[in-house]
Length: 459
Image (cartoon, rainbow, N blue to C red):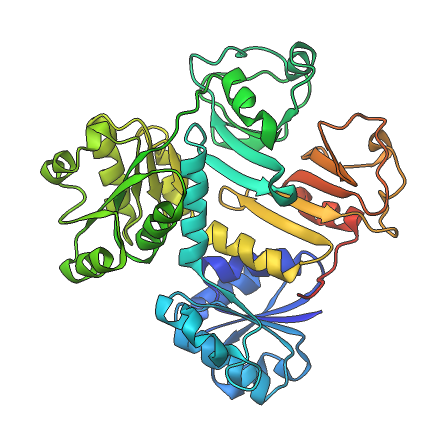
């Protein structure tokens, strides 16, 4: 499959890594020669230096025989024009564009994306993806990461192991014996900065960050077993009233249960816009790092603070100040993956990586069908993959014990018809049509895709 990826930043680079690893013919286009050289040197891709929206650049990148183009540059307008040129000049049938500006996403103007107007097949909105991720974090305040699978019937939970965890120093196989009816399994452990798939004999220690796959009905019990309590989030303070903060506040206002939200926004114009847009949310104009303003917003009495400005340092410092002022739950938006290791030492309970959510969203649309969902963990350290088992797949018809999964792979769940099996047994047989959810370290993803016989299946 011939794929052109426009934009060699973090999102474009990660998409190129995924698709080139599946033996697709990938070309990366960017106006920055250094970014193109980096992609060409580190990945099995070709590189073209130039402006993605220029027909001559796309021609050089091989657009004449291209099957899919992904426009993920930093400019909405460049991405939109790139898709137009791809359709009008080269007849490329599948086009994905990353678009940030909410004005372009207004439902009133949806007609401009018709094939005879501005032909974009799939629009990815980072702000909307991040807002959804933020809402998921707020819904599971005892976790630092969370994502839904199997149509919402199963949940991936990121849990930090603290001193009060009752199962510290307990081999994982004993957890299975102690809680035989619990539909949950530990699929990943991050210890001292290294992420690995645990063996049954591995124990958990204070400071570990674990990834647990749980049936949605067993989430509360799962959290309690690992020393976490669940509390309803009724008072939320949002620092940053831009697209993300505004989207979160709107979603909170639309809920049936009563949620009291406040927004702190530095820009007066943006604060006025937020105040005009929202009905029940209180909007304060000022600096989210100001302790005086945080106290005015009663930060010590809110259930959670969500820092989602467009500046990483502001988000981190505001979250730290909110924590010091007595807020029990702080969540920070962090674009720079190198800052993530600082979150736990600073007392920040959870973080959101916009690039990871965007990458996951793009991959989900590309692989729609056989692969139903992909969630990228950390800085692409691992993936959780949900896929339907094909009749031609090497794993079809085999018992779990007979499938040669790599060491860095663990099965989280298996759906058979209407039944969901969390922690399937070694004797469980995988059949055609089953839906399987796997945790796989990055180096093992290509082998997982081979076992699933994954190929790009278009939307």
